[in-house]
Length: 61
Image (cartoon, rainbow, N blue to C red; front, side, top):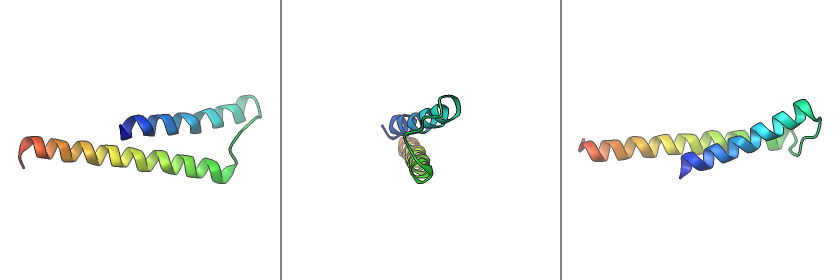
């Protein structure tokens, strides 16, 4: 779930950057871009830590 959320948030970031590069029409400013990218990174880290915890629980260690 967190991995999918990270993908969605990163897609919003990528769409904003692509629109800025090709159409000169961004919907997020610099601070908004930073916050969206930060949220994507945090969600990705949470997803990876959850998967690691699940694997450790499954292995019994």
